[in-house]
Image (cartoon, rainbow, N blue to C red):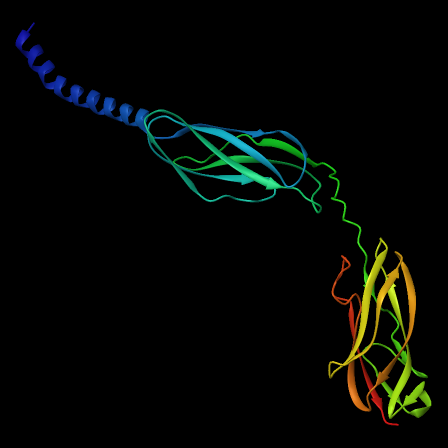
Length: 273
């Protein structure tokens, strides 16, 4: 046996084998160290909600990875909603917490059953379990409105023998005059006062004025029961010519009303004796 030949042959083979084994070892190490997400889980809190709406469902979860790297993920929902892309930076193997919320429920959505999940985008696609939940909006008592009066007028005004709805025009002549004194003309005036509210109203004052600021007539102690109407009959002197007049119900706003915007009315009166 040639011992040197054997040794030389072994010496030639050994470097190649060592190189192969080294490359195989590096390849195995690279495969083992490839960064990846190894798990993702999510849970809903609460899983069953029964209360005032909108309600808030909280979701808490974890994403686990096998080493150092960056994970991109987003939350997805059963209604098709997709959250913004978010990132987690891992400095080594382990897990990191993630969380989100879902606010929902109301008159148009009194009940809802759904889920939310984590969707891993990179380094490797993955989807967590579906965190299921159910929401039921509880019946809530609406706050009771304070009962109030609501003073207004529905029909209009009658002067002399002529009637007009509020916003209309009255054309008067001497046949409508109730009393003439030293060139001044007095008329019978009649109008309705309605309390559309749920409590009695009064006493309060109504005043009827011309566009010149002249007070034509006033009633200072008017009272109207809830859901009732009163017809006010009075007299007043009107100037000659074409003028605008304003009726102010509850002049001074002494009555608390549910609607303060329906207390004033106008009418145009043309009087040529």
